[in-house]
Amino acid sequence: MFIGHFAPAFIAAAFSPRSPKLGTLFVAAQLVDWAFFTLALVGVEHMRIDPAASVMVPFDLYDMPFTHSLAGTLVFSAVFATIVTVWQRNALGGLLAGLVVLSHWLLDWLVHVPDLTLGGEPPKYGLGLWNYPWLAIPLELAVIGGAFAFYFRRTRGPAGPPFVLLAVMLGLQAFNWFAPHPAEAGPFLFVQALLAFGLLTALAVWVSTNRGIKVRRGLAWSPS
Image (cartoon, rainbow, N blue to C red; front, side):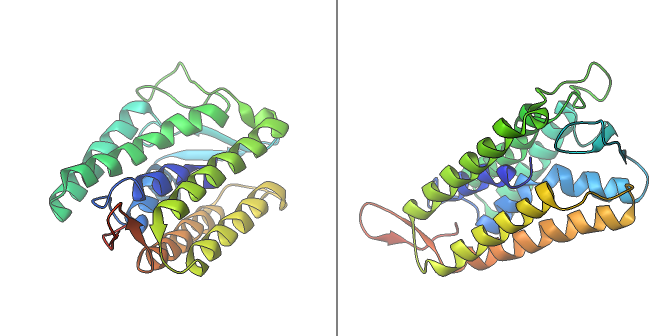
């Protein structure tokens, strides 16, 4: 799953006037992948290209004990929640940010072939929807489309920025699905992923400066 990971960020951003900014929640949504590709870049965690890994994604994610174990994700979630709580003096915002981080493992569990762990060691888990494109593709589009609609309905401001963000997300997802896959896993692939996350986060920051959460009596222009 790629852009589907950002669905909890849209929902959390529109949940309350005390929600963290959308850009912060976009970081939360892909925090463990930020960490994975950074650790892969320096040789701490590992992946390889294997066309037989799954029908949709030829990534053999065989060594991710720190970032894609449930225990590791819980640590990332707790640390990020604490940072947001202290930084913004906002316990609700910290809780929402932490839950968005945690959602990453749960969403990966739906689509990954068994390569996720509970504590870094086998057994490995994953429902393997990447082997069923007719199910995985509509699911990801429905998840992100529903979350975006929820965010758009509950916020107010220019319509252009959020739709630009959505268009870029869909473009990157189409590239992820249909462009030729790399022949090998290496620095180019890892940096490319980090740049994609950075671009989407920058656009989310831009969106959050233009939209505020609607409230029953007027408009709360609080971070979203």
